[in-house]
Image 1: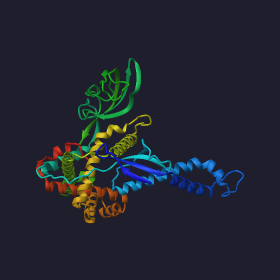
Image 2: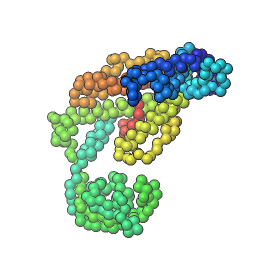
Image 3: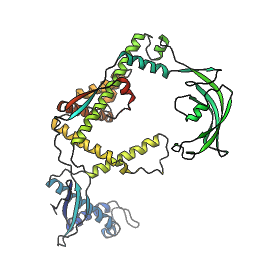
Image 4: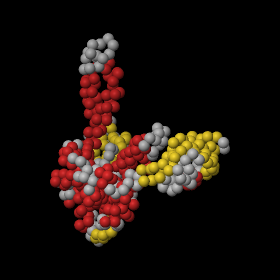
Length: 440
């Protein structure tokens, strides 16, 4: 059996001409039949006493197919080792267009992709924006105010409803005089002006007292999420059951205790808010800076990536999306999610993964045990029993692997910032929190 390289049609594709000895395949097939014969059961024969001729008649094709796959795999494996190929994904193997001319061997062609050759990036002169954020006393005040609003209680009032009130109502809706699915409810509550209801519905429920009723038209938007009613004109009838006036709790000892500060001390509470806010700000700054570094690395990386890896990552992302949507209660049974929808994002992920891996290898950026523990201890600081959390976390292989991956990326970010032209990008806490969180 032999293997030899041929013309390479693309930078990452390799074609191997494989020759397989027919005698070797036959020998392997006989070994398999021998193993089968020792345990096969057939009517009229005792186990292990079935004649080989009968075994071959029944299992010969199966043994031949398995033997062929075994020998081809062996030949392919030898070829990969001999030529020192770093393959990325399984090969595609088919009969060769031209045979060897011998009736003692079979010829095949294996097409496989290899990993690209990747150099460590030169980032000198590359500008990377590092996000920085300073917490002010006003930021702490604003955070405390948000916490108070989150614990707003509503007290029933007899006056007409206004923006900010919570109304409890019954409603029924019809289109062309016919009730429609999802168009009615009892004891439905929402806060006026919070954007949870369509504008016409919100306005209709405003300036109404408990016990009052009203009928009004409502034009559903063309892009409304409910396709059955999108763009249609409906008629709604509502009856107000109660109007609740918002009561934001006072910033006093009682409120502080509800926030987990047993002493009720305001100064202690304020310091706790500052610490938690600082943790969140640090996380977001690191995340945005990491994104900036990865964007810079992605722009530097000009190498091709193996299609097999992109296809695998695209499928993984499609499967993950399906699982996430199903977990949110959506019926995904007959909803196709083509993997090629994620090709662009998967290509970026694969490219960055390969580049980061090479940087880690060349620059020896593997995480130390101390770095991993420090990262986990930071996570544990938000828990009531941080030591117990750290011990549990480090004892879980999956969680530990995730921590290692984060620390590796942090090491790459630190290295990249030491090489590049870093420009600080100051942001206020308010602006930083207003932006959606970014994946590290």
